[in-house]
Image (tube, rainbow over all chains, first blue to last red; front, side, top):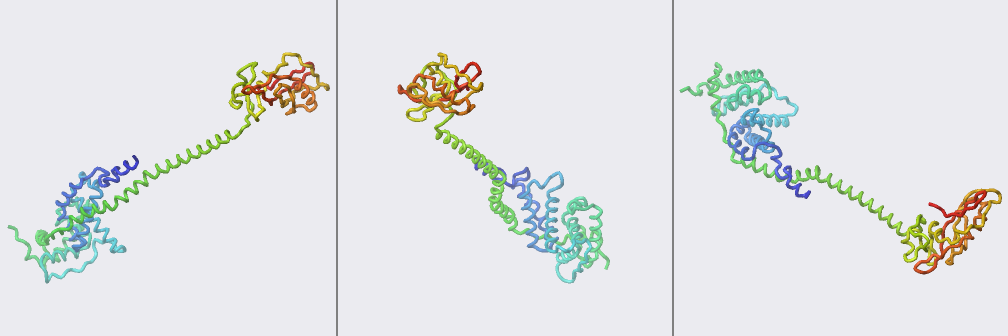
Length: 187
Length: 220
């Protein structure tokens, strides 16, 4: 009887569902809905396809392991997943450069705007931003998050987010000035 | 060159097109999770076992050990009791005026114990019931020195009911000889075992007072 009880115990049979939380189907649906946002955020933040793929995998695997980690009352699934991805990126940065602090105003070389596509130019310009400014810009411009949502993701206050965004966009406006002619005309 | 305004900046930035998600990502996520779940299933089994089953097993083993110790000690006591032939002569009698141990084995009688093929040890009270000359006044004994006291004797009664031997167990040494002579005056009915007369070993108290001497059995 002890053996039967042991093998059928939920902790052994279905470890993912020890606590109430999302089912695997729900997580799979969330994956299909948010995979582009998560992957591209990781790609734009790190600049590496392989790293971005690893991070996106880690993000959803983490959700599979802890299905009760997402609480709908705290925010949308998109905000939750992007927040997890952002934390994973920072963890990787700390592992790669344990002695360096993640500065929000580190000097980055201005990219060469002579050759390459506009997409490459913009990518290079964004990559030249300090990490904390870079993530604020990505969340604002490409994820469409509000200032409150950005503050929740990065774990700071709205004032700091505004400051970072302001400095980042000032920098980008100068860097991307040569591409003015490529700005799409409003219809 | 003038920097871009906010709108121009947003328009230029939107030209950084998103990249397609690798096709293997879904398999990596859900396939990996299943593999990791299978791989760690044994880990969870073992950790669960350690949390639940091992303490239960330890308690069970301890319980069995304790039971085993008690059973071993109990069985040793039983073996010891079974081996010992000599127990104390029990007190009390169920019958009066009848030869003791007539149709039963002596060791099953509450007041008798078989010492050998011809001898029984009986309780003083049981021997006293076979006493034939208790009703007759005995020769009074007076402590020659005026001493009082009780002398306990072990007496051997022959198969004919005559006291053949008496030895002092305890008491005043000055009264010992007088006590032995008094005990040898006693005559008993023969004790029968399955119809055969048996010699008997028992104990007798001889009490000396200043005026009257009483011979009585050890009362328990």
